[in-house]
Image 1 (cartoon, rainbow, N blue to C red):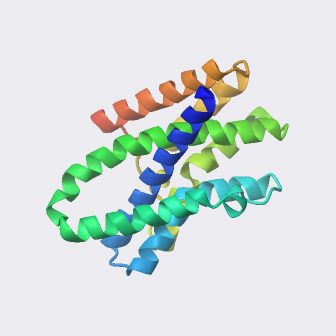
Image 2 (image 1 turned 135 degrees about the vertical axis):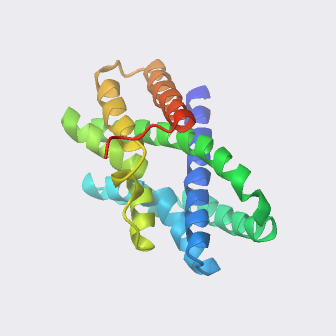
Length: 200
């Protein structure tokens, strides 16, 4: 029960965080409410859809629409909030980065689990985990005509890739999930704090 609750709650946090980043990006480009909802939903579930298609599965979000509903509600609520309290955007960005780090950590594990269950190689596992973690953000940036952020700043895709490789070689027990979750989360938070980027 604890394992299921942990995964469920972490997944919801990740969906909310990624949807929020889609809303903020959409407002930056002055999209209407429909455009913002589309951007929020694709940011939240896009990586999972790509991953499931690659392993020849019907995307999970199409058979269980909870994540889409959560992302849509997040988009509407946050859109109204940011429209009314524009002066609070600055503090919200910092909170969003922390939530994003939590979501990224758990989505990396979820992507790795699905790939491992599909009996693919360790390299494929790392690719699937990375797609799950950052795929939605790539779709978000492409939809608004920007170079995907993972190609020009931050190193979170790097964390997904190597975190999932470590996860692949750990025993298939719950403690392995916790170890990788904390490893990626802590490093990601340190990167945010010290603004570390890959060389350009």
